[in-house]
Length: 432
Image (cartoon, rainbow, N blue to C red; front, side, top):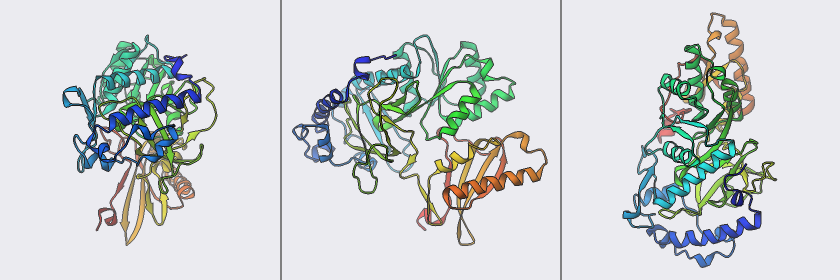
């Protein structure tokens, strides 16, 4: 049931004592970097984990402003790998690792996979981009550490993905959720059913926020159990938090990360069960520790104990990012609210796109929705009824009436990596 039982079932007092020791060690490492040295931190500041609130928050902008080596704490000769964001605007955010960091990360991912039911006897197919993106190598090394036969399939090329699954008896897949709907369409085109024509039993999904409706739809399409995972480049990547077999929230590995959830406006902690912004501190990273890093991801601590017996606190699925919210006609809207509605409607397919535009001096929200192929059969009345129903449900949820356009499956352009759901074309979004 446990890969590292002693750590995974450590009681609350034991975890807090371990965290306090590791937090002092982390600060001792961090002050070797130019950035944290300038903040005049000291391990002596920390008597208990609650003392972490004495330390200022670290932001993505801090990483960009100190690019590339301002957070590095070891000589470059000891660094063996870096990962970074795309950096399409301004400097990318870069994280450096020494050998200790990579070994620790692989162990965390292995522990995470084991908690879902993955075992050394499994065949693990990683449908994820390799390179600077952390999902490819992060899961690759974690699955290898666990002892699985791993297939570094990479992203895309759906026909090859299906062939690999069938040739080698893939039992476990890691992929981003938006891709799995498109892959299911290819199965159908090939007249194959993944529920009967493969050996699949477990999916690990993450890298982009998704709703419970999307998870359940994936499970139904493939006949598997799909487990939520959470990670971000700044905290290594995958392996920060993971669901166990019970699927009742993601255990955040508290021996490796110290987590806070704060009100993003007041920056004060919120009670367990209340939504807020996740703030994380690395506790077992040497080359580039980060202290009180603002993830911008919105979640909550789930109160109570998990039936699986693991004692590390659970966080809820990420509902979005504090900087993903858009404002239209005076209403605050998160894309996940709209996804939650769409994927509860059986006629809706796997993809949608939200476009914000200014029409006749008014802000409008266009929602393009792919519907299942048998709906485009010439029955205009049926399409009109579905359009009106989707419009009503979105309006009731977000208090803004959208313009809904139903489109055929596959007509919305697909992105190579994470799905891009919102396009803001309003002049005000460009600073005009």
